[in-house]
Every structure is written in C-alpha cells, then in structure tokens.
Length: 66
Image (cartoon, rainbow, N blue to C red; front, side, top):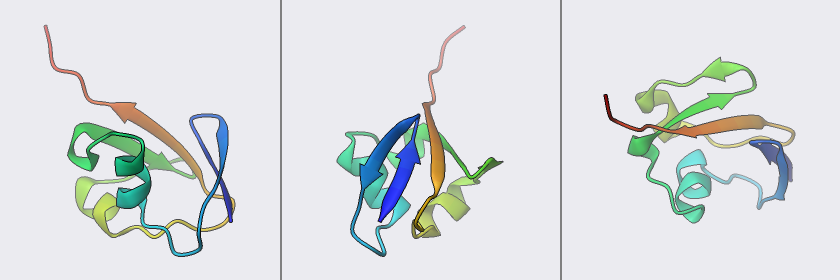
C-alpha cells in the first residue's frame, strides 16, 4: 500500500501501525505530533492507528525550549 508522509511517498505492508512507521524512521511516537489526512491525532489516537492506503501524514518533532 502507498502512503505519503511529509511529502514523501512510502510503500508499506498492509495493516502497518502508525507507531511502527514512526519508530522505523528513528522517532518516538511520544516525541512527535502526527496529522493524518488533515486531522491532528491525540497521543492516545496515534497509538491505535493502523495506516490505510493513500493516507497522508505530517509528522513534526516536539522540541522544547524557550
């Protein structure tokens, strides 16, 4: 199946969990904000998402500072 994340196309196995996709990119789900198909996900929602064909993701790292 094909998805787009941050403007880049990816081919994934069906039933790929969002958590697995994020972690495969060297990121921790707890340290990012994910928008899926134009809607921001809460951390709880993000942990339970199974990606679907043609999903579009925006993944942004959370950075602390001031």
